[in-house]
Each structure stands twice: as structure tokens, then as C-alpha cells.
Length: 249
Image (cartoon, rainbow, N blue to C red; front, side):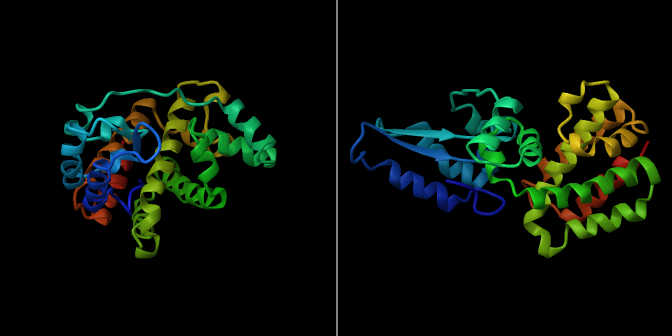
């Protein structure tokens, strides 16, 4: 089961509750996979609690997430945590160029931006990602090179255009990824640790103007905004505040 929009819904959790009470038709047990479990908000998490606390003996619930700290503590405390190591870039690139017959340049970029997840690599629309990255590189350029706050506010308005509603959180993901690259470059990380290696020249210029402590603060501020998205925050106001705060030295 996947999020229907920004969140996993109460109705989806009720459906799991109903289905969990049926005995398996063929095997010994039934498994329910909840993808992006960090998208459980308080109402949907509460709807899941009873099933999670007292599942039938033949039912197993598996919650998948790359951000376990974002899952509500009431849910997290009732789960057994199993961590999976990310795949190496070389492993994913080999699969993408071999089994998927993907051009090496595209495979290399996808293998880096997928952060160890083959599923994410296969589901990523590379053209869309590159468009989003170009927009977020503008943010970093305005922050580090030009100091153009007016440009930052225009980008914020573009991000919050109703037509781009579904792109908002992916763009935040891309922005945080770019900041992490800038931070790593500033700390002298080896080239293979940089995700967006195909735009390393632009990132290098930015990293030369941004201290490691400032880059670390940017990541914290982006994560704070992510937390605010779980409630009915005004995205435009929150994005304006984020960019203006990031612009401070």
C-alpha cells in the first residue's frame, strides 16, 4: 500500500484492518506492505495502531521507510526494526547497463541519486529529476553566489504553484541532496562520495562560498520544514521563511 497523495490515509489503514482478519487462502500467513510509512500522519497512524498491536496470528505487517525517525513514536515503538544496507553504486550501475540496457551516463547518474535503492533508480524519471535539480541549483546559486533574495522568493512562488503541487516534496529532496554534496565537498570528501557528479563544477563554486557549518544548518532547516509538512502549514509562507533563513550568514 502506498500513500494516496501526501499521506497514507485513514481509509487505507481501515482497509488493512478489515483484510487482516481474513485467513490466508493458500500460504500459512498474509503479509501487508506499507510503503513510505513515514507518510503516516496522526489520524492514519491511530487507525493502524490496533492492528499493529494485536494482529491475527496469520497476519504480518511490514512498514517500509527510508526515514524511520519521521515515523510517529507510537508506531515505531511497536515495530521490530530491521535495517537493510543500501546497494553499492557499482552494483546498481552494472544492473542498469546490463539487465536494463541503459546508457552508461544515465545509469551512473541514477545509481548515484537513488541512494542505494534499486527500486528508486528504476522509478525515477531522469528528465524530471534534472529539471527539478536545475531549479534547486538556482536556489543554491542565489544563496551562495548572488545573494539575490528577490530571486529566492520568486523560486518559492514557482515551487508553490498549484500546477507543481506534486513536485514540492521531491524538490525539497533534491535541494537537500545538493546541499549535502556542497557540504561534503567543503569537507574534502573524495569525488566518489558526491552524488551529483555531473554538475560538480557548479557545486564546487558554491562550496567555495559556503562554510561547512552553514551547509549543516541548511540541512537542519530543510528537515525542520519537512516536519512542518505533517501539519497544515502554509507551504508558501514556510518556503519563504526557509529560503530567507538560509540566506542569513
